[in-house]
Length: 281
DNA sequence: GGTTGCTTCCGTCAACCAGC
DNA sequence: GCTGGTTGACGGAAGCAACC
Image (cartoon, rainbow, N blue to C red; front, side, top):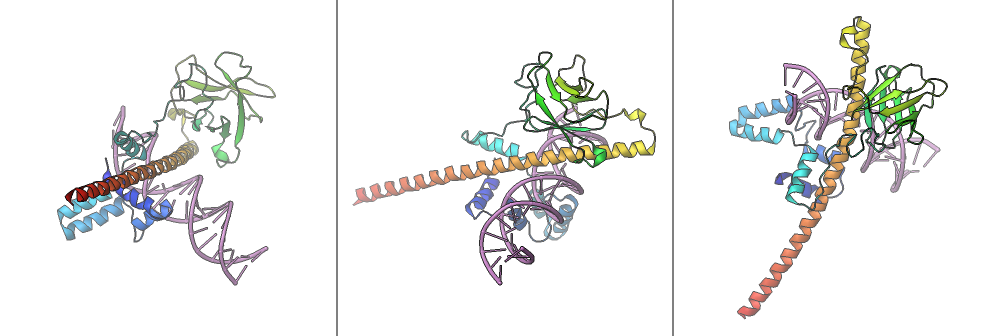
């Protein structure tokens, strides 16, 4: 349990509603110092070691060390105080869902097609297909999903609003599910279903590494990897901020509870003091 | 209406860290 | 050692209120 953190958060919450970013900046003043800016922080720590000795350096390194994740901290908090809800671990997409039936309320996910496109499943259950070659956001295609009238049990038909320039597209989705282009014609359909054969989980690259020969292909692959990394990090940043907000809310509620407890104990103490003084008289 | 300051949100980068 | 997840820092954009 990191009491230092709770105390610091209590101090923060006790003050005015300074934005978290500015609060952190003020804490890290002056300049662009950052507790986890590796080389910069290390250089500061090294300089202090020379001037202030090994012990001080170690203490400084402890201060500079990275904090545990919000989920970890909050779960530790909640283990100390059962009233505080835990941040739930990410559940697999097919958890709690009958086999073969897609989870329509699945969290926003990012997937990669065998044609180099990216598929994002939004909170609302819609599927967005983007082409990284067209600057990511541009070329976004949104698909509506419906479960009604599925031709086979457990399959979700995704009706494609636009004309697909590709043929025989196949989208692999974690959770032993696969999105496939299920029909041809004027209105191509997509299905999310459990594959009959074992498929690799997660991201499937557009081509096997052995098929990449030309520098252009390598560059495209590098660009694709970068786009994928950026999109994943984008989603991770959103999730991280959400957890941070939840973490701060929990800390604030904990502060409120502790303040109430403190007030109650002070009142009890005053009552006992009065009783003792009256008995002494 | 234009400007300014503040706040919030988001995307990106870079570093750290755990799991393999 | 590599890889992918996590998160602080930073900059930009947008919204809003106060002021001129």
